[in-house]
Length: 114
Length: 100
Length: 79
Image 1 (tube, rainbow over the protein chains, first blue to last red):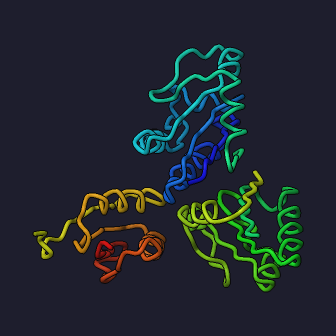
Image 2 (cartoon, rainbow over the protein chains, first blue to last red):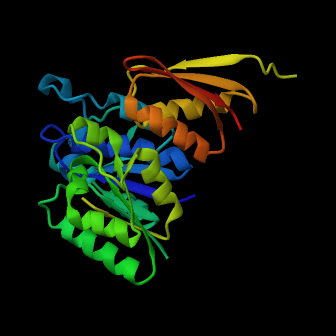
Image 3 (cartoon, rainbow over the protein chains, first blue to last red):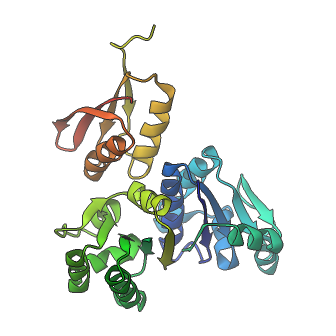
């Protein structure tokens, strides 16, 4: 079993990238590997209560639900949150200290910045 | 060694030439190379360099959903695959690198 | 003794990759070895990819039947 970490760093509402990163993360669980998703920099907005449907983007709820159901850890980088004044995340995304983020990435067999 | 490569950027990004060069060099050095194209990188499927990589024995798969969303046609030699194929590559290779 | 004649149905209309395969895999986990699952799909790429991926996981594809313009039934025997 490999440890795979997907890192989401972009703003969520001007690209389909973040939704695709989450869809890919769901897919990566299919061979029983342990998949973790980290939201950092502007990517932390992805884990907040945004409404992509107002911009005719597909909501990402389904991917978040699937990742939670598949027990994939979801972390938001605390310094990135603080810098942007974010204090509320969607369910199942845990704020994590930078040390924990770095440890998760360095302990991964595969890191995918998306 | 088995090498897996994930590419997510469109063909005008410098990642395309990097992936082509790495794949070519790895294959020539006797390694097994699998490339997965998803998101805007599926447009790379039309590049002749990718057809040349297939001729050299590089295995290339695209995310069929992304291809369909972009109304693209299929390219012979490229697997019209799924995220499961990306998972298999990640799971089976010795080294996996991503270009996004 | 398990009932081999029982066919479980999973309606995946409206679902795309990788949810088609994730949900099929989770449903198969609930079944006993040898039991049959019928999956209903309306996304053409999934009709190719779900059976190919299932075969790779060791399951048997009993048949793929087109039921309409964009509607297919895939019958699977759990490994």
